[in-house]
Image 1 (cartoon, rainbow, N blue to C red):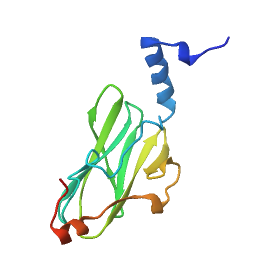
Image 2 (image 1 turned 60 degrees about the vertical axis):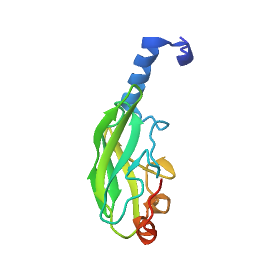
Image 3 (image 1 turned 120 degrees about the vertical axis):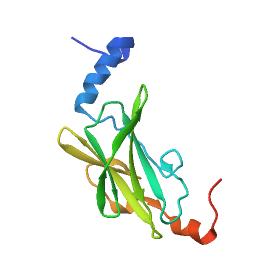
Image 4 (image 1 turned 135 degrees about the vertical axis):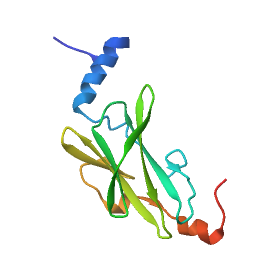
Length: 143
């Protein structure tokens, strides 16, 4: 029997895709970056508490963590839409540059997400960066 996923439509296709994501992480859906959609406030001053957001496919992971300042902070699912779940965690920033990445767990396996994308290991060179010190020195915030 030859089966073509592309011929599935509607509820049948959604059911099939849901079955696949029970076992595998949808790598194309995992996303975060250093923009205001994923950092709030986008332009923090030292001492501000920043909310970090991570997007995944809907109901696709078991847990997510923000790794910042030598801590692994649990993330909470704070929003969902038809396709995605959004996880958030809060971290107070200081004057120093904050380097951070995320980890996701699924079925006992851990994956890491930074500027390289989703990987089984993490290379700190590609971690995201947040530099409140520059904003403090100029006293300016982004528009």
